[in-house]
Image (cartoon, rainbow, N blue to C red; front, side, top):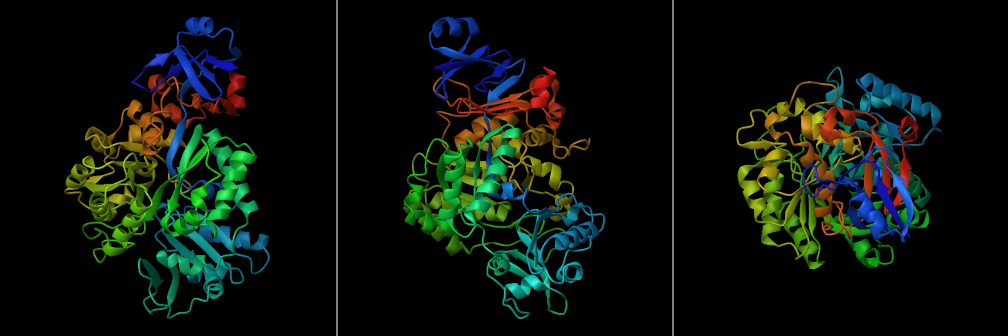
Length: 536
């Protein structure tokens, strides 16, 4: 009827370094924890299974507070460009893909990042035409706020040279006014709308791959935003239902609802009949700005390396306010992508003007650039910050070229947020970054790139306890589950992340190794690292 978990170091995460000797759970819920002998005596008639951790280190289940689960799964199905270090490598990858696909079939790729290239040459229409003249090509930049396409893709989308600009987006042009194949923010839809739709089978395949990979990284759940990207909100919900419930891929998925999918979601009775402890719906998601890489994050001042722009406001003030009002009418919190301080300022203004429904919490997703007065405003609101520690490893040092002298700006200042009492949750923004919470924790603690010594923002380094809390207590609080998830306590979910080694004792660099030993969700072992178990 119940299972005893013992034989390792068990951190409750209620307080720093607090441990217990054993945990007893029944039906996926922790019933008791503490001294092993006492638990064995107390529940001797109910214990039907004993799980020995074999010296492993158990934590409450780690949850990624911000990612795109299906998008992460698609990384196993599409051309991956994240490892390319030059324009030439990207073009060669595209050329090779055209040899594998029938003429006319779309070449879809993602993850290119010119900041990681050996030269500064841009990825544009002309170069793509040379390697793929007979295949439509669409390549998403790593931030997903910019795409590069070729002429065949423009033709497939019916996009002509004098296409007008798009509100909330940018259509790239050469000096002669001709399209260069670059589309930013909402302008991306001009091309994306022409890409053939996906099937439910495709979504099921992507979700399955994503969840199984998340298990191997120690994740027991995630907060994800997928409902508006695959042609049908209902089809996407059906895929989640199939994978998590029918196929029993245990994983706690908390789905944000993009404002563009809201009507369909409401017409589908808010996913009624699909919700469960494994699948639930959360805040309304919207975007206030873009990304720093493409200079579309909205700052309160011009970019240091391009004073002609301060970024892009995806919505006008009036549009943003109406979206917040719409969410409030549905009794919903609002989760807003806001990277720049200009975007955060506008978002916080409307969140305060139109208060969050009682018992719910708004989210400022990313919050990379803030100011002290904005932090003071956040203290007055039921708002949490979804932070992505891995951005330190990927964005520095080039991000400082964008920002220039910080002045009054708080740059990726997560220690400051926590010390000011702002609740923070930890995520990856996968597939933009690697899904691994291990690497996220490492970045939060060290403020370095893996295998590098240079520290970026030393004063903003988190303690190991604070960093792990982002993915346990932080994620639980963000989804209003702090009373049943995020720590090891009686009545809480039996979700566990088990490592082979103890980062509290051995330091953050151990997190860069293959240390996930086991992942447990709802009392079920969903992943075992066989190689690690063989070493024990």
